[in-house]
Structure formats: C-alpha cells, structure tokens
Length: 101
Image (cartoon, rainbow, N blue to C red):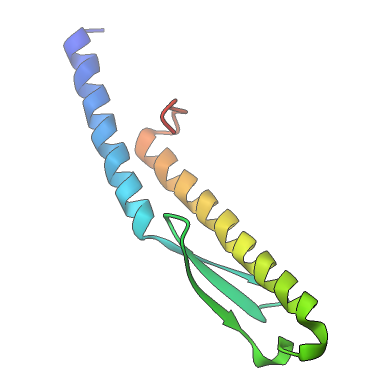
C-alpha cells in the first residue's frame, strides 16, 4: 500500500475519532435504581448532571437504603454512558482497537 494513502487514511480516521469524541462529550445517559425510584443522568465526560429521587424512598428511618439507591443509579448511568461512548467511538473507527482509546 502506498505510504501517502496510508497517511491520508490515518488522518481521516483521526478526524473521525476527534469528531466522535466531541459528540460523546455532549451525550447523556440516564441510569436508575429501585425500579426507577432514583434516577441519575451522566454526560459523556462522566459528569453527573442530575439526580431525581422519588419522595417515596425519602425516609429518615432508612437513609442507608437511599444512599445505596443513589450510588446504584449513578453507577448504572456511568456504565450506560461508557457503553454508549464505546459504541460511538467504535462506529467512528470501524471497530479498530486503537492504542489511544
């Protein structure tokens, strides 16, 4: 294969990767716990955007359960975002496992 052609392909792939990464930064993913009683939204840069807690699970007698639900919802959102981001990046790179990933 021609070296110039390979370089052009690498540059094109780098541009596609950069665009995909910028798009991922703007994506959001919602996770939930307790059958949707606690919901968390995470952005593509893994920042927590919001938490929604149903009043039903807010009881002073069981703060531990509420804390566990919040942690579970945030972890669910982060896992979902990670999966979405990876799928988006894979689409941009044709599924190639690049070392910079």
